Each structure stands twice: as structure tokens, then as C-alpha cells.
Length: 323
Image (cartoon, rainbow, N blue to C red; front, top):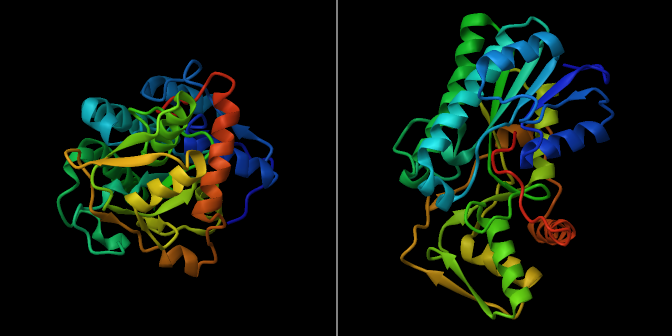
């Protein structure tokens, strides 16, 4: 499916990590009519306001990447917020799309926490709902699973071209570097940066460091999202990932070497590790012709350079809600 470069495109969640990367990608690809709305202008949890906005803006394409996000600490502190806010956002945006006939296609992107804690590795798309979820992320995962199911039921009942994808862990410019609510890479980067600035020679890291994760630069996810919008029209979600993983210990050591090489990492075994391993089988999208471009080492260095440029201006964190 090809789209005119002046087609109105709505990125729901443009202020978040993934949404801001998609906006950058669309601009670099020559799409000049990208629609966005700040939370002051449009609260995506307000179904009536969202329907009104869609009727006025009438976008042709929609990227649904809005939602409340965060790491294990944030999920433990506010599990109801993660469940309620994400459910409300998904429902409101999808209702808004159904209220107009202008939208030709919608792409919804979910994180990999939707898969079972003990999924067979690497995780294929058909393992969704085949086992218990990771307890520390369960409310968040349930909301994201609901988003996937909403897209499927709309396709089946209304015949609308709603497609969905599940992404591996992402990091990069626009992330939240809050030490308490951020995901593992930005939170560790911020802790190590603060330790270096304050003259401390160590930081504490949650868990044993043994959990395995696949980390992908957010610009690679944005490329995948635009790629799928143009080329994927099937029912059922499709995985996006790099196809390889590393232990949290190894990733933490890589971040330390970039930010504060003299620091010692102290792993707190009393804290949860989360899912033991989370590696997506991304063979379907790679067979279609997409592949990531950023190595983890280069991505960490460029992300830290971005963080320093922003943090030096007095801001080291973005709104983790991302809308």
C-alpha cells in the first residue's frame, strides 16, 4: 500500500519515546502532514474529546503508540494507573477511528511484556495468551493485550484495516531517564551519570543481572513501523526485534563503560529480575525485507550524547505517559 506524502497522518503518543521517533522518521521520509496533539489540547483518555478531534482532523493513517510506560519500579508503585490509563487510551483512539471514514489504516504497537513469563525462546507470535504473565508487569501487559485484541475484533467485525505489532525493548532519544520510573537502559544511564557527577564510585542495580533481553534503538522501531504501515495488512500481530539478546549484567557493564568506566556495579539480589528471558522471533518481518541498523554499542553512545545535551539544559526526563 502506498500513501501520498501529503496524506494527513496522526501519531497518537508523539511526545513519547516511540511516537517522537516515528514523527522524525515520517519527516525524513518526506511526509509533510503529520498531525499531533499535546495532552493540553487532547486528553487521549477522554473518548468524547477524541471522537470530536477525529471528526475535525480526519486523518488517513494512524499510528497508535500512546500509553503510560515505565519499568518494574513504576509498575509496582502504580499498577492501577498502568491498567486504567492504557485501556482508556486504546479504547478512545480506536473509537475515534471508527467514528470517521477517512482512516485507511491504523498500526498499533505493543511491548513484548504481552507474552507469557515462561514463553519458549525465541518467542513466536502464536505464543500470545499461552501461559501466565510476568507478575510484576501483569496490569500493564493485560492492557496491552487488550489493545491487540481490539485491533483484531475491529478487523473481524467492521472490516477496517487495523494491524498490530509487538516490539522488543527499545531505548534512545526521547526516553525517560527518571531513576525510579524509567526502563532499564535510561535509568542505569542516569544513575551512572549522577554517580560520576557526584564523585561516587558505585551504583546499585536491581536483580541478579542474569535476565536476558533484546534491546533495539527506537529509530529502528520507527523504521519498522513505517515499513509495516506500507507493507503489512494481515490479521494477527507481527514481532519486531533484533533477533539477539544479552544479559542485563552485560548491558549494564556496556552502559557503565560509556558513562562512568570507573564505577562498580552492585547487583541487589533482593530485587526482582522480571521475566528470565525475552527474545522475540522477528523472522517474519526480516523475511519481508526489514532489518535493524543500529548496534547496541553505537546506540548507547549516541543515546548518552543526547541525554547529556538535554540534561545539561536542566531536563533529564520526559513524561512517561507519552501523550
